[in-house]
Length: 156
Image (tube, rainbow, N blue to C red):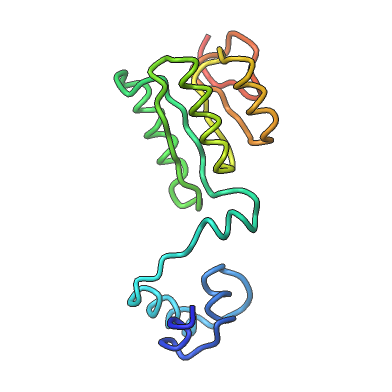
């Protein structure tokens, strides 16, 4: 941030405000800071933001397979829906393994995503407990015949 401030001719606090999108800065100053950041190759540290906010700008998506076009279309739908939202999808594939699903969900939850999309309604008790304990918003897709953790979206 020191380098960006020097290149843009502003203070570190101004750089911080521009990068976080908070506070008031003129359009001219904002453009100078953004140009300086871009020319210096600055990439924000989202982990620092996630630590501050206690959640990452991620939506976890668990898919049973990529071998079925339906699931790649689900991922495409999630991705296009999140465009311009400030959130990014991250995904994993279980290949229909309950054990792999539980392991994958625990790993994804460790990143503190804002939400998680799960396939179907059949999950291990341990995985359901982990999702509930995390407090992360959850949507289960592709099925509505069963007991959802929270919200189920699908066809009967």
